[in-house]
Length: 373
Image 1: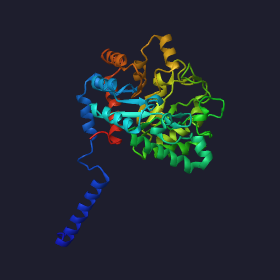
Image 2: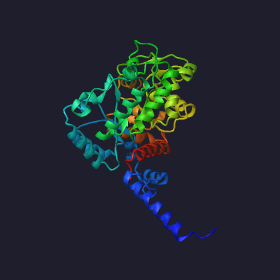
Image 3: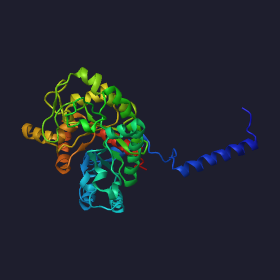
Image 4: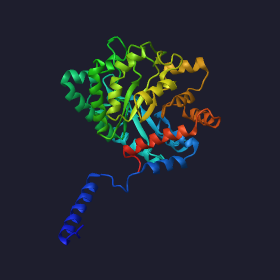
């Protein structure tokens, strides 16, 4: 190779400097700044068992003083905001509150909410924070088709990010032709084959704003009853799930969805004894058949289907949820749950290596969202 001329060398140097300046201006991470997988694994290795299990909790939000105390004591993975957490706040006060909680936490927090639009729109709880109303996906499709759906989905995700919320438990990937089903109005209102590509575009629109998306409610409600109030059972065949119900989930996973939320519906074709959220068999399908590699999170463990199951089975549901293969648990009684899961690990019911894998997935998500430095 010939020696580079002085003129060419200077030109190359100027181009390199320009590229570096551009990266700095747009905030692009440099190779030195990026947290490597090895560094994340080392963080996990240095954490105590209780700290690791604390990371696996996405707890319903509490008042700021309690939240900061809990973050310092339990090192929780994050908080889930409901409509009541938006009410009575100014926008500046809301943003400042989330910033204060992030600052107090040893590890950056995942701040999640259910912002589907329509009947499940946390932003609409307070126009001072959320601004104008947020229509349902069905209404967006009727008003402006796919273009309007994708545009509004991205705009809403941007709004969440600006508020300090980095995880949207959306989009709804359920499909059903039963318009009387409780879940119907929250779906796209389309057959599975038509819904699938739109779900993929919703995922990309959300995650394009550096907000994590979550496909829900796996394995799909179909016409099953609402598990908020009691047991919901789906008697569909596995073939029906594979050929219809799972098409939107598969499309969303292929599009790179960061997380999947598992419902409490009982999938009788696979596991007639356990709600999907507590079933290892259902989670194996999600990992092995749908090839999902991201964060699996339960639906809220305080919902009626789970409280009823806990009363009947006399088993600690947090332990069952971890055994099933969930990486994160939506649960309010984290103080009790963490102790129970710690005990299960020490007794050999749960392998600590499984806990490590879950925490590593959580930290990788936090890194992707720009939370880890």
